[in-house]
Image (cartoon, rainbow, N blue to C red):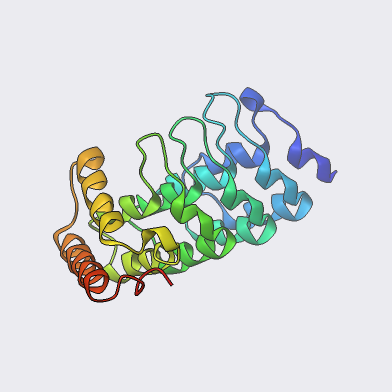
Length: 203
């Protein structure tokens, strides 16, 4: 009975939503539910008005293996585009706050929805801002997201980089020193490039 994977049971949640809120989520059970009904990955949690999808829950649940993130994206790539209605987070926002975030999981979400790097939450912060705040994420993780952010033409300016710094410090109250130093250097490079060749960073 594959349709059972989409039926809403406890507090109007699907079995997958219930499972993704628990500690030590069994990867084989997630896989079995998705094999039975891949569309269950797109079902939203209406109970607490967050409208979380299973992917949101997994990305926030630090007791869950990030292997489950890969399983859900493979089964239902559209899940990477969903935005919750409490924080206005994409799954990438939530993932960038995790202390155990991995480069592989960031890459999986970015590949599924590259535009997530520009999505702003209720505090006008992008996923890149949350990586700036995450003291446990290696610098290469920030560089991965920064490379994607810089693919957007409007971000390739001293003003945009400075705004990233000021917004993160204002709303989050903190930015890692190594990341701030890198961004300040990048801002200076853009400024010098514009002075020497105004079209350098706009092509």
